[in-house]
Length: 464
Image (tube, rainbow, N blue to C red; front, side, top):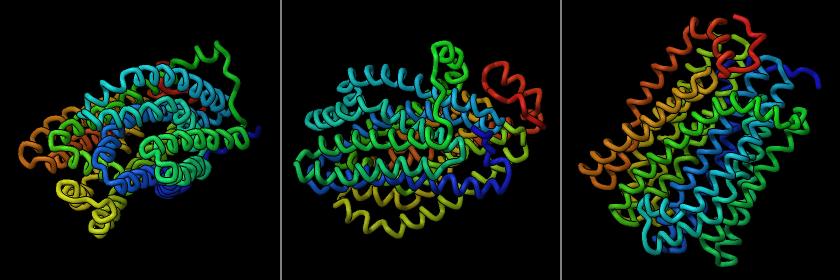
């Protein structure tokens, strides 16, 4: 296989960010849009318990999905650096061993979560009939986590090669399968939540298959991982994967506190929160995609030693966040009435939906800033900075703010507290990012130190 030219070492960083984010977001939004349609269908059934059950289950699923995101971040960072350094064999090896370790760890993780489904759902506030529905829904979806991990890691490998389009098609294909099966299973066969869960599992199978095929067809496939290779690669993989997983797990922990706080105001409030939770990734899909899209750009340029382009990419990422936030917030404000009607929202459910479509949407810029900073941390050898920021954001930046907001404004105050708590940590993340992107931090001497510690790999060909 001929040596591949790293794609992000030249050209406008803003253009790379836009193309990677938009193409990746199409795939993400295909999946998130189906989740939104799930909620619309469930709302049509006219049972608040079903919508609330999805809200509680969504918190647990966020917890399991975060595990896959952490492994995908590690795989993407390692492969992108190898591609940037021109080491294709290392890229193939890291891709294979990341997948194997991810599947092993995900299987163990699934077994633990599945065994504790009922206490976990109860912990976030579900009870009675709603608890029973949420656990039944989760019992079907949770075992498919290894499939989701394969799909997400496969997509991260493709994006590390600069192939955002094929990564996009994997999630689009999964979204289409889910969209076709949803009405058939939920309404046609009358399976309700069970039907929605089965459709999600089928989508995960599809995403995994469609993400893996282009890796074998266009990028030389995966090196067959031997036991010595797995043991040798465990350190560089887990050095990034472990803090990345810890980083991602912080979000569902914070969301669990939010969900439990909202549960104090009844099923209508939880249903409103669940609807907002389904709209957010569709509305801000480009922002969610940004964290995975900008990472390979930073990683390749770090791997090639282009410090100035690393800093330029970070600044352009923040600008991109600002533009997307303003545009999306304006659209949500204009569509707030139709959205309330679409979900048959009334009372506190409608109040929460209108609150999100108003001022809260503008605060999403700060979440985007954290995404960009975390991508910089993970790709520049400081993955634990991401861990500190995300855990701080979802503990100190969530618990006191949500508690204070709820005491002042009730259920709306829960969302207000959740969103405003991220502002402080966005500034902290930006401060740390600027520290690690100074010329001396990106110097050859510092890169050699990273390599010795196992934080970076395949950087022997770096230049200043």
